[in-house]
Image (cartoon, rainbow, N blue to C red; front, side, top):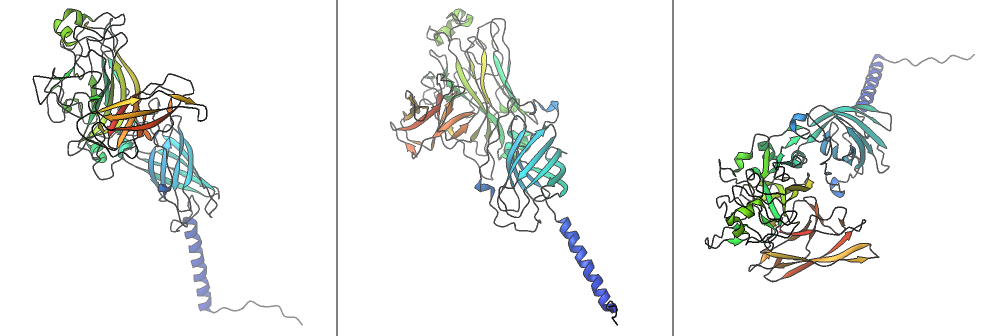
Length: 532
């Protein structure tokens, strides 16, 4: 006769042990569920030999001058951009760039083998990020964040991944210098003028902000490693005859005549102009060393913003029909400054105005954020010819006006804890640049030539040397550019650490010119490394 098997009898101690084992297993399962992450790997996992962001190259932030999502001013309310570096709840490190269209690209460092590739889109205060695993390494294939800004530097939302898991997440923006100064200079505003002239003054406002919230000048200065912000302005084209003279410190009775051979030079000139010898602020535009004067830096600062302003006048410039200005005709001293002659028709003065940082030692760092512009206004200011100016022109004294030719709103500058030594513009009395003719290559489909710089001073000039092709024809690309500065490409002169008097150095240029436009540019030579 067969017996039915019976369950084994467990003692009380055995039952208690079994219960404890069940509880431990349940706890482990709960802990495992809690450790689920977007990438599918516990936060404590090593993730293998993860590669650093330094192994990859991210594109610089895109110039978003025309992007309506960037604020025009603080009063327009918060306008968000995700460009920059973020850290999320899981310790993932994100480096993101947002384009004008709102599309997002970038990289995310997660505890897996390779940085993940980021795509996504932004609209208003919301954005989505899709992270894709570039390799098969045991992590999930992808995960996606759906986020909404909760402040100027935080966003919250939810995530899902390819394994079917989901959760909530918070991201925190890493506030950097570039984050608060990029897209913080307004589009230049033109004003003044009359029925006979165009606009005669130009101004712009720098308002450091983080996603539409003003950051404050003092906070931005500290974040960027500066004691203050100012502007650096340069004259890059000056026609002859010129009415402008620089004070000569070695021989005050013999001022230095500034002509077409002097360009480029800082504005105001290094030792000040004879029409206002007290305005000496080199290399800056506004004077950081005085207070209360019409050209003192503190006159143009508020808690949150810094303003630029100019209203240049050159009565030596001929009018559209070659007719001299009213100021030239009626003022004998003006005619004497011009050598009793006017320029040919179609002439102008060309300017570059950039935001700059002031270091603790008083030196400046040209940040490349700003604008280029021209003026052919041929009247006067207070009866005299001026370049750097702080007030309106004399009404009815001339014709012509101001034209903005380019705007650059971004920089990659970051403060890393040490003072940055800015590059120095070399003037026309130090370096003479010469551009060769261009020859078209059917092989490379580029227009090829050279630019040569020659030390025409009596002293050696230290490098490295950077040549900016300012005002390069729109639509033309410098194929062999080292990088860009102020919205224009530049070339680093290789293997040249200094130039002795009379010594030259040459670089090759290769232009792509799909529209076959006339290729024009103004070579500006700098000593030192540019902030690109």
